[in-house]
Length: 571
Image (tube, rainbow, N blue to C red):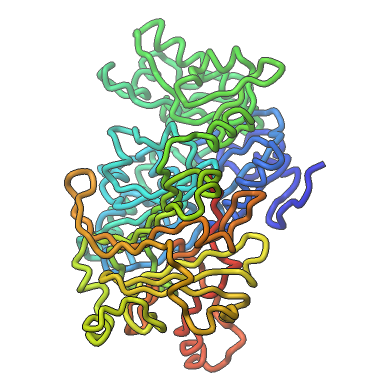
């Protein structure tokens, strides 16, 4: 019996109720997280319970096995938050639908997303497969992508690191969830023009009967070496109307396979196997599935449909194949991952987001990374050796971003350790103990010029007895890295500053038994500009009737919320 089931889990959920195709068995657990923390909790719960896990967006491009799913399906249906960072930059969570993005841009008179209108699916899956249609391609509008991997670590990518070509990305064979996307829309357009294109796209889909019956759209990718689209190939082979059970090749588009009402997943896959074999046998056209099978399948079906092209597979004790999984319990692989002795390791790298996620409040080109320099065991053996390294970096002029420097009086005295440094422009990091975050946490602040402060807390904003007055001598082994300039990937100029911590610096907040630590990065830039990484969703104080009071309350950014900090396991 599984223990400590999160309260956003649903047990014994019918999969056919959650997917476009209306097919599939029963999911033992169906997780509906609404933020990054609950996604991470779901992943780590799967680890602890040794259960397989798959990811479900809107189910517009996946077909689940008829066999019951004996693990956890992690749904992104509640990861649907979005906001304009600036006039041109739109941040969306991975569960925002493609149609919603087109509509958001329509309201803002921004060109670049009208082709996404009525395109089934969510942006996370669209990024993963580099979706395209009606002259648009998702790679054309993406700037940055944030993912969570199968071990619960956040990763950050630029557009160049993701997209490789036609329906091809580096994420397609990586067990990572697209949880956030920063989209870029530099051009304005009249609403009438955008709306016309949106309606043209919708009308074309209706004309081709895209929504006539349940399907996942194109069943196979186009193989451009053949010289013609897959739909045309199947049309020329006379496959329109071909049936297996209640699954049928569409009479309108030969690359669509419809569920006529009571089709099983096995019906649909048997039909696709016939289509694939006929194209190969008669036209020497080797076609790959575009729709993603997920779950447990007979080995014969796995081979007939060419599922080996769709990513890693795992064989169970009965010789059946697990495919389309995000995580599969394999103690050997997990132990290998955590015992890997190659250091340094990046534990976290991501941008900052405005604290309140206020529309058009701006976005600083500032990023943060946390790197583990030596193993956890080595750090305990050498407690004064650099262990974790925290870097803040920007590709912009740091004097422009960190615009309130510490007063010159400190510089004249060569005084770098400054209490209440938060009054100036600083980068901050908090570390908290996973088992007692509210009574044991640390705060470090630093400016690009190397002014810094370190504080220890025994309660929320309650300084420990030895830190009532900040004491620089308590942090002798801490290394301050003042701003330096270097190039990333030999091309991107970066201004970098930060700190390196020893085990002795952090032992108060490290869980020795589980090797976990909580952290939170923040920026306090002055002029009521506050930023977080990773970001929280801020809840409004809805009980206030006075709107001015709501505004005043929300202007008080509070970084001292250790229960919300991010969790990482140390290697």
